[in-house]
Length: 563
Image 1 (cartoon, rainbow, N blue to C red):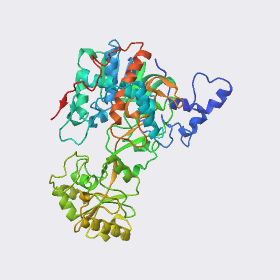
Image 2 (tube, rainbow, N blue to C red):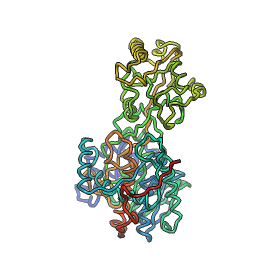
Image 3 (cartoon, one colour):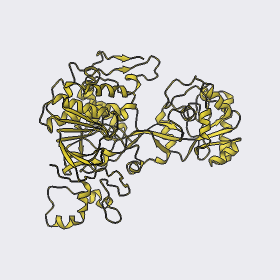
Image 4 (cartoon, rainbow, N blue to C red):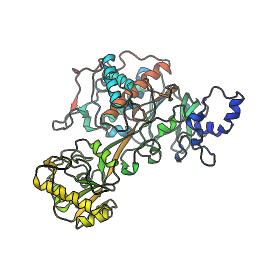
């Protein structure tokens, strides 16, 4: 039976550490010590703050705190999270060790997590170790070594095998519509939901009789013998009781923390007041559980800021997209000045630009709004998809909702609009006059060189100012791992029996997320964790052809869904 050792129980005895250590009584267990700042784990009254190193985070769900358990169960390996990393890892584990008992958990009611919304993880060939190291070293250097080259190299060497497992052995298809503006193919159907459904459907087969899937089941704390030995995980049952799952290995594939700004503010240096979250069940559970161990806090969390949005509107609002993600937009900041070429091809760059301002407003005149509704836009790509630029649409319903929206300002004149938005009127009027003159000249933007086809006149009033926010779909990083996907401390000493996979694991991003990293990294982490724990925790053997009958090469045939 696992000891119910948590950071809280450890810290509650911290007042005696000095006496015990002086007497030589503290052995076999590494205290947090002054380097981690034990006092930061305590409230003003000296009470330990559950499971987290940050005293200001209240941790209302008590993640990382081991509670009294109503019962216990035994499994060989537990995978927490059913995104592509957790799902793939659990399946590989079950395939390679038919006698092992494997548990796959998710606190949601459906499988997939943010993979359901991911666009792509196109297959790749493996490269040689020398080629992988060369490319990885360049990637690491470009990021001033915030990205860990060794992880990139490991991923590249495994590309062909992981691609073969996913696309050849398990028949995942790709979506490659002829009109797609994306050069590389996407997941079948356009996002990862079909991939997850395909893999989940295969779990009913005899090959996975040893794999149990439980939904609506939240992992809440690790079971530890000490800060470097994980012996299982505690789960919260639907009836409010807790169960201890004793296991030889636990894989945290729990996703990011974009839905938990109270926690995220202690991980991120970025201004979250400019952001809103569109993720699902991203509460940082894995991060908090990892902090029960000797892992400590990792230095960089990346916000996956991928779009701009008008708060208060639905994710599929065409008015919000027209006001925020349209190349013909005109943004002004708190000083009444433009600050970017709004037609920038990078959605991420525009999102970050919004985050770096005090406030940002998209200015639309009634004439421009009418042109938008008539489909007269050179570029319109956003949360609702692509190729909407030439489609007429009606903004009446959204404009009615805007009447009570604190982020939408309407005035008959630009002077009045400036006053409502709280920006300097003189500067704002001068900015708009220059913009209108450039539109009329037809030669392009004289300030930021925005192309002429994106320069569209505001027309007459009334005028609107739509205040913008940056949309975070998930966060990346947080849990430090080594090249085996093991959770490690700051000196890279591994926590035995504990792994991390997917966007909760650090090493693949800087403070900015670049499209395409999430899925390929998740696939590698989940696969690597499964293969390592089989041979190092479960005493099993991974077959040389664990990925199937053939490794993926550029000549491999992969089915395409062209619907």
